[in-house]
Length: 198
Image (cartoon, rainbow, N blue to C red; front, top):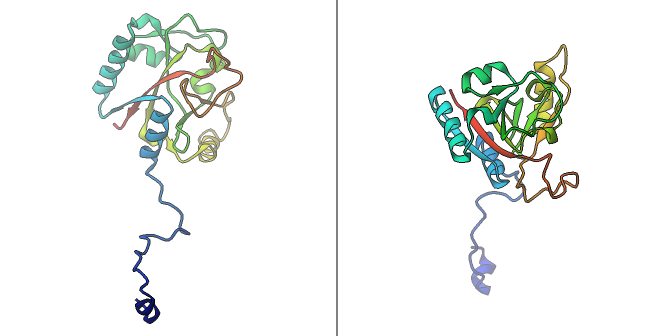
């Protein structure tokens, strides 16, 4: 306390623990993604083994009353591994199925969205996919933002950059109202994320 404070009875105030001018510390990418993804209505299951991954997929099917033939895979390897229906179609409507099982390019931490390209969804529009999307991803696919994801995408596919690049929107995201979706929610989806740390 200064000398004038003693005379005028000024109360001691606590100093802030950190300067308001310093940037706030962000959560780690995985925590930030989890907060944003779940706040918007996404559901994810963290898996530490291949066995847990398959168990969680079976539980998702059981919870939604799906038989394996109700779930579609666009990659033969996923169809074989998860016992789902495979299609080699590259465009058209897949609405006859209850869900689609895909991978992704990157998980965008600052928005909770999922970056996709033709490598996962071929040339399908998001509105052509079933209403539920089950995404299989790994912790190594977490990125800070779309800009970092696009930079890594260009580096990953330096010879031929994929097309049909888009972000998967969560159907019940209260922060975004897509005018194109209207009442039906065709471009936004219910999303389950099977996150692997194997």
